[in-house]
Amino acid sequence: MACCKRLFWLWLMSPILAAASGGDFQITAFDPDGQITWTNAFTRGVCTVETSSVLGAAWTPRQNFFTTNSFGIGTFAPLPTNAFLRVRAVQISTNTPQAFTNLIQSYGLLHTIAGSGADAGNDNVSYWQPYFEGAFATNVALSRPHMALGDTESNVFIVDKNSHSVLKLTPDGRIHTVAGTHNSGNGPDVATVATNVDLNQPNGLWIATNNVIYILDTGNSKVRRLNTNGMMTTTFTDNNGIDTGRGLWVRRDEALVFYCSGNDLMKWTPSGGTSKFNKQFNELGNIIVSGTNLVVTDRGDNTVWLVSTNTGARTLLFGNGKTSLVVDGTLAVTNSLYGVRGVWQPPIGGYLLATDEGAQLLYVDITGVIHILVNGFDDTHSGDGKWFYSLAYKFGQLRSVSMDNYGNLLIVENDLGYVRRIDFQRLTP
Image (cartoon, rainbow, N blue to C red):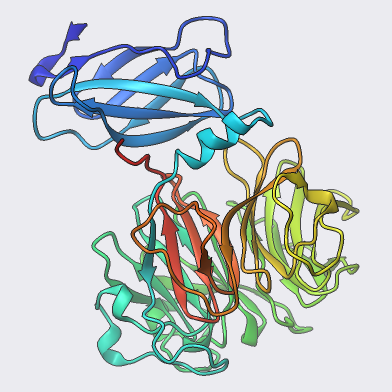
């Protein structure tokens, strides 16, 4: 043990599994203001900071961190009282029951963080009311939300298609309009206060690492830029129109944009304008970029594809094109991904998938094996305040899945009008 200022105590602990890099997993530095470093962690794993007021008593998990190499740094909120501290490590890289158990036990409770479900279910209807502004988000009726993404300041942004707006959920649980007037229209392209710009059924969203927000203003066939100062401009207009939309990805320097338009995966550059990058899809869902590839969901074909960002050529990644439900623990390429829409890639690799008709949240590990994280069925909405992983149905139709800066999972139940969160937080034993 070594004594630190503020009477924090540091206790070094061996990992739950053997360290991957040969040496002992150990804490190398600690700042009582909330920063800790370690070495010899797993290259695909999770580290958990735990505290205890008395040695020999139960340890309380405080914060999880994904590990992608041997060395790591974690930052957590300083504790108000003296405490002992330790860090535990688990591995997730292998296709073993233990590795999957390590993953699901790193996540905790399921919550509804936005949406009341009131009057939801009707498409092309806005449920927004003026008194929703600044209200607690779980008391607000959402209007077919499509995407929820987190920024670096613990805010969650929601593109709410039928209220023609982008909403911000702040850490205090309240909701605020940040773009759109809640009236359908085609606002100005020049720099304008974003809440004075009419949007038309926006249903795609992307947040750059500098917290600049990009909006797929589908009904106006535009990609708009919401700066951190609240001003909005139009990045470009697709003069051929955007059909349905949904998927959007923008490089931070804004020199490359990919977006979805019905059956077509589209590309835009400042010099080349818009072009059809790949025309082989049935009905596109969402997109992300992984290395030199796009990962693209085809909701209409029940499949997921890799598309080269250089050539536009596609390769089947997962899905057999059929409409039955997933068989847990089997190869993802041989499974039906019924209405797959959402896709996200965790730092440790693999993929998170969200299905519409199947209403399932899925995880494909790095070996290509698919696992059911959360089951769903039609208009089901349940499980708040409980550990997320069980056989019970908890979700209705899903539109998207993402991961915020803290590793929490954000899931959108579109038809019922909810945004859910699964905490990246171990439950206290």
